[in-house]
Length: 271
Image (cartoon, rainbow, N blue to C red; front, side, top):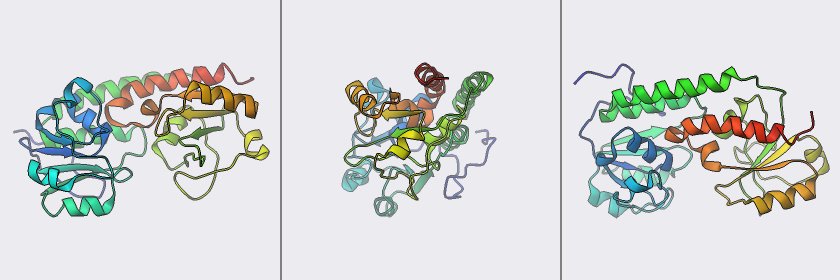
């Protein structure tokens, strides 16, 4: 087997070795999708109930609970050689418990769109799909170039909402904020937390060009957007949360979707 062209080092700095015959349990929905798109579905022995893409493929893969409430005994019986986790999505105590019997833990933590290149090459290199990973990276580079070729337009300040009761947003130190940053947009500083709670105020609203309501994790709808826009008096746009926040496979259509989001906002914000 030809060794991978890129070092197989995960987000914690752990060096991994190629393991093309691995039995994989993925605790990250977006990574489960990427593993399937790299042709590795046959090696994925377990996935969370939130791993819903691609639907026709994952239905054959056993569920092992949620991203934060996994069934440890189910995973033990699946006898995986590798566990793929994410720093933001999975609980450290759970991962530590699984590490007692899963030989290899692959930790991921993409923070910006271009981090998807390293993610694809890491997974492809470990699990024997380097060629598929390079093809995916080429497609990503093409979409990224198409996005960058467009004029970014004016800098906008947008508030990206992920929850209500309480209202919660994102900090600049998040993948979503860096996706928005590809448009030249900024998010307001609302505190020290990566996903801060906030209260509506005239000062906050007056500082914004638009509000984006995400369809996940809270299931905001167009009705929410219409009501909030009427209340605030500034544009409120409903956006697809998967396209904005899922790294891995979803980053390809996500880059295309960014252009749609820009068009939606620019069409509602006074010049």
